[in-house]
Length: 305
Image (cartoon, rainbow, N blue to C red):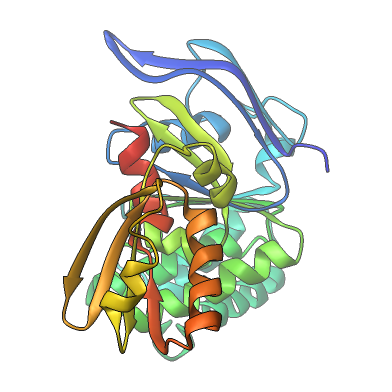
């Protein structure tokens, strides 16, 4: 697949503050999680890709073209900003409708697209209520609706889950996954790492304006073999299970808590194979296996150390 977004030596600074530093990034169709703590450069990268900022150095291309002051590109892009920016004295529907009109739609198309977008984010029942009466989560849904209304090929979502309740997050997860499965390109910016795990395994980690890692989260995880795994196994006889790992050179430590054993291993692949063999040979009954080190948070924490 050809890249939809390409950055080459992309940098952006504001005075002495370097927000994005020499990024080389290639984004293909599907959902990509743009990860990093606050101040990592996520929003700056998005605004560069939208043409809202001019690069200080290097270049960025979206759909094969430079986005800045390029109406042909921008008409194919949707954007949900992190901050709220609403017209006063309008309903949610009116906001989406007039954004569609500004985009260039006729009245009938703008009306139909606004209604469809509000339905996608489950705001149909409240879309004719004033925005000033909305909760934070409802305002967030309407922001996403206006980004979806033009049926964009490329969608930038900057912290879209902010303010949403658990039901709202699940609804938006489904919408984003559906867009990715349909072949659209979605950039999901967040500092809440588990949100990305619910949607995609394709990640781009930023830290201090630089690319820390990119690719499939498990491929990234495989790059740091020296990072130990802590695996907690709950079973009927945790001490018998732990005895099978005592003489293993890759076992770093064992700990027993509440009917479970936590084993820290330097070789997770070998650990899981040996665990399977022990369970089959000794007829040990395992109730659960958890590994908090096999998630994005552990990858990020390790890489920034």
